[in-house]
Structure formats: structure tokens, C-alpha cells
Length: 221
Ligand code: HEM
Ligand code: HEM
Image (cartoon, rainbow, N blue to C red; front, top):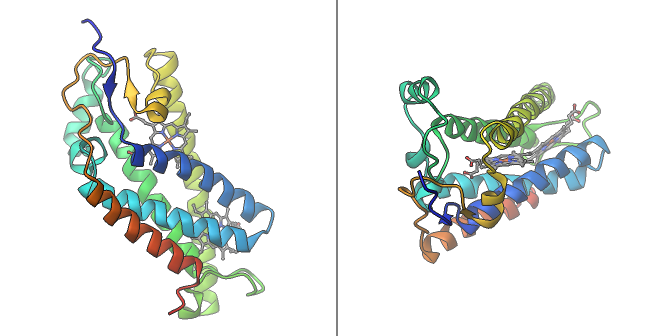
């Protein structure tokens, strides 16, 4: 099969989302480790905005970012695993990658959700919605927040190992397309990027920014 090149695969919003998410999850981790909780709540609020954006983009965004485009039934994903997954290289997430995207987004939602209600042991550092729960419930939220971060670290480690597997074993570099948006190693360009319009981007970005800002302000009205 002769490679068709280059093929547009990821739009700018999806790429920006990914690398900002990477930076801010690292920053959230570091700020919590060093006890910089003001910065932690701020970066957590931005992660909330990013994940909100990605969830909306999964429904109204470009074709390769849409959940409907890459989330297969479990049977479909198993069939992909059993088939020769080293087959033709096509644009977008493969069925297994699709599930890992879903797992990371769900874990991030749990991370953010529990962070909003968390209270630390002396009750001094708390999430902006912790006034809605008792101290014990806030401590339970903090325990889940800590546990879900451990699970997130494991899933992200698997994510990075999978990207390395593709690079070393399949000789396919997935990182460059996530940076440049184009892929020079595609065999079958069916499903090439069809960017969504500016209007949709503005709606998704406005909702995400508004929610991140409101969270960072402690949901003040
Ligand atoms: C990707 C997003 C986030 C990550 C990776 C993250 C990570 C962490 C980690 C590693 C800790 C320390 C847990 C421990 O003490 O064992 C922590 C604590 C905490 N986080 Fe987050 N967090 C995130 C989002 C948020 C958000 C959105 C909020 C609220 C706006 C928040 C509020 C808190 C609070 C109040 C604590 C203190 C709880 C305690 O010390 O027991 N976090 N976070
Ligand atoms: C905190 C760390 C990270 C998180 C939470 C994360 C999360 C994600 C998510 C949610 C996606 C789906 C993108 C979308 O459709 O919106 C994705 C894709 C991707 N990520 Fe990451 N990521 C992380 C770190 C990294 C790192 C360090 C690399 C580079 C080695 C990387 C490389 C990629 C690539 C290449 C894809 C596209 C995979 C494909 O072609 O299907 N990620 N990541």
C-alpha cells in the first residue's frame, strides 16, 4: 500500500486541549505535592474548563474529535483486538484508543468532582463546594480524590506506553500528528479531518471558560 501524505487528522482545539491538559494535570499534581493549594484549586478549575470543552467538542466538534466517530461497541473493540490491528493506518482514534480516551475523561471528571467537595484534615484547605457537605463527607471526597489520582496516574502511564508501543513496534509516530495536526503515515485517508465551524468553537469555548472562571471564583454569585 502506498502512503497518502500528508493527511489532516486533528484540529487545533483538540491538540490545544491535549497539551494544555497534560501541562495542567502535571501542574495540579505538583501544586498539591508542594501544598500550594490556591494554585492547585486554580489549575483544577482550568482542568474543569478543559474537560468541559472536550465533552462538548465530543458532540459538536470536528469528525475525528466526536465520540460517535471513535467509540465502538465493546464487541467492536474486541473484534478490533482479535483482528490484525496492524492493518491499514487510518485517521482518528482506533477502537481501543477510543476507550482509553473515555476512561481518561471519566477519571478526570471524578478527580474534578471530588476536588470540588474535598476538605483536608484540619479543615483549612477545601474545595469551593465543600460548604455543601459535612466535614466527614468532605474527607471522604478527599480520599476518593487521592485514590482517583493514583488510578489516573496508572491509566496515563498505560496511555504513554501505548503511544511508545506504536512508535517502537508498529513504527508509527502518533505524537507528531498530535502536535502538527497532520499525519504522513496514513494508508487510507477515509475519515480525514473535517473541521467544525467557528460558531461551534465559540459556543464550546465560552461555556468552558465561563465554568472554569466561575469555579476559580468559588462559585460566587
Ligand atoms: C486534574 C485535576 C486534579 C488533580 C490531578 C488533583 C490532584 C490532587 C492531589 C494529588 C492531591 C493530594 C491528595 C492527598 O493529600 O493525598 C489533591 C488534594 C486536593 N485537591 Fe486536587 N486535583 C485536581 C483537581 C482539583 C480541583 C478541581 C479541586 C477544587 C477546585 C481540587 C481540590 C483539592 C483539595 C481541596 C485538596 C486537599 C485535600 C486534602 O488535602 O486532603 N483538586 N489534589
Ligand atoms: C497527564 C497526561 C496525559 C493525559 C491526561 C492525556 C490524555 C489524552 C487524551 C484525553 C487523549 C485523547 C485526545 C482527544 O481526542 O481529545 C490523548 C491522546 C493522545 N495523547 Fe495523551 N495524555 C497525556 C499525556 C500524553 C503524553 C506525555 C504524550 C506523548 C508521549 C501523549 C500522547 C498522545 C497521543 C499521541 C494521542 C493521540 C492518540 C491517537 O492517535 O489516537 N499524551 N491523550
